[in-house]
Length: 446
Image: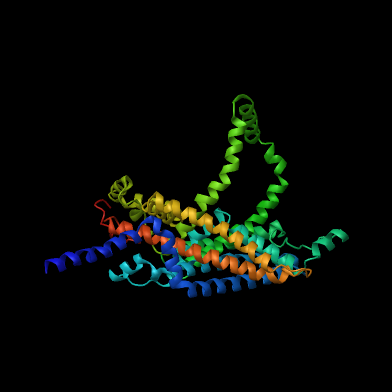
């Protein structure tokens, strides 16, 4: 019996060893592949549906952007382009949502009695912050480029014909040709809609309030870009001649002449900075989106600052007069709804540790490089001497490349969140979930 017990002991310890190895940050690629293997079909379906809707909207927008009633058409084009961005939002959230049941953290939540959240709730919660990240980090440039390519593919020789005839048919210019006055009117309408739905979203009213507020905010930004571009173009000389701008140029010229290595230093920074953004900031932005989709953030300030010195200040604020608290809440409502989830997501991301985020960023960059090589391989294999045959192959090659890169990236984001959340829970720290703040205690002074 003693010999049997001695032999059985190692088998009982094997599972914890395997579990600890699985939760190692260096097992991130394997965890991502595990999630991909379990959820490959729904990922393909979500990506394909999103790509089809996006392609149809781009084709419709490119078709409408030419003809009579040109300015009215461009208003519709901008509306459709906003729908293109919203399609990207829905596709991203949907792909992250369908893999959540394969996560260890989700299984632990289910075992703890947490109910399954609907896709609509996740989409409604994520929409506003996603829109800010999508536009701030330049992801929208891919949609602009896709619209221009779609417009060009409809008439591949149109630009050459315009150059020969000395005319301008508006090819590839549907997003920048809207009249500034029309832009201002549509901006005002979009702003009113953004204000209305934004207030409803902040108050927790309406199932679609967050989505509608996001659509209105994107429309406000896109219509505003036309008016801003026209205003900046008309006043570029004025801006360049302002005192502050001239003083900055004088300071830069003086520093370059008097400080040794000034020009070389800023030249090096200018060369390295784009790579820093692509390698660190962009992966962190996508990781933040994933954390928001999985609910690991709080909609209130208290959960975000829990465990920090700011919580003591918040407790002191609760003891102040009701009118003071009400005024501060009104003044900070817009800032809180947009940036508190983002700040909390960034804070929770740090819990995973530097190795986990470093490996995630490395894998993200590697996927981008691998996707480029995959696209080149597809173009090489399908190359033909037939003129314009590339028009037939460009979409299938782009679809396969984007499908592989996007699906693996979403699994990588999910696996990173899963490892960070599970390690945090097992180490006894606060779980990476959307905790509910304690109910407000009645204020002693009212």
